[in-house]
Image 1: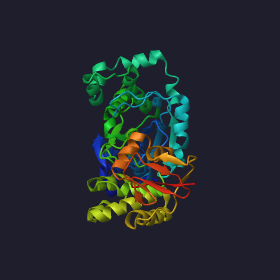
Image 2: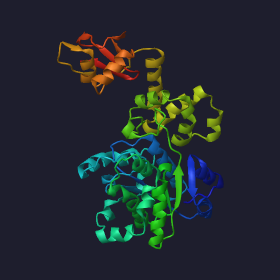
Image 3: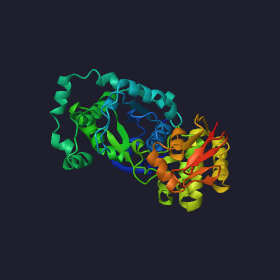
Image 4: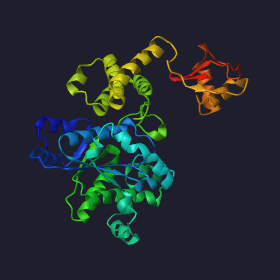
Length: 388
């Protein structure tokens, strides 16, 4: 059943939206009650979907609740290339095995937002594996190298003398072919994907299809203020535990909270505007946990956060680690306990006073630690282990 409620349609067209091509055309279709084929693609370049990507799935859910058809494409073929839209260097090529492993839980993660039983699902290897060299050549002659290289990140890499792979230049063409194959009425993506989305419009015209409308969403900043990106590790993942999600949100800078509330939740905008900065952060943390883990998890994660960060107690559930040695240098201990990825990281953390053993702050990175069962080691604000 299609919903043509004008207020819901206006919120759909505005909440978290950066740009729409063609806005008037899309609004008219929505108000007329046409069932639109809403395309979105996601490449399985890693096993986890972060909430920056999930913001797009929330927008797809808005379309789905208005009665439109969500056409989800998992880019098991294009992931071998990798979208270069926001990359300052060539991606590491992925094998088919890597891709299969990465996408093994994608639908489970996506189902926390979308009703996956009602979506139209495709893997783009269905058609791109069958693409011949002649067909790709026929399509390539419609575009120029200048068009591709003038996009911002390629231009920066070109001017900086960094390599640009020929395979990367083909990515927008392949994404555009996806739009042709599924006959997309609208494609949804991040603002950094605008070049690819527009290329899809051009390719649909070549195949005598009406060009898709485009909706791009605002970019979500990561925990460090840069764009949220798995490669930078500044992410909140759908699969993070409730305690991890809650703690990461509470560590956010205050100036990022309103964007997160707008993009990553569906709390009414009028309610968001009335929140104080302190209340807004707590509200966001609770809402993120509730979306991905439910109300009970929201309550327990909030209580656990208060226990650790306000009452300065150890977490109620601390992972255990076995250490065979009787004594270890503190840097080796932190690496063996998986609290730090390297000795250099461990040394910085010790020098900053960010390491405690049984609540005693350790500041000498040369110290030898006598290993005892039951010792609780804290590294940074949120990482704890207990010696088994």
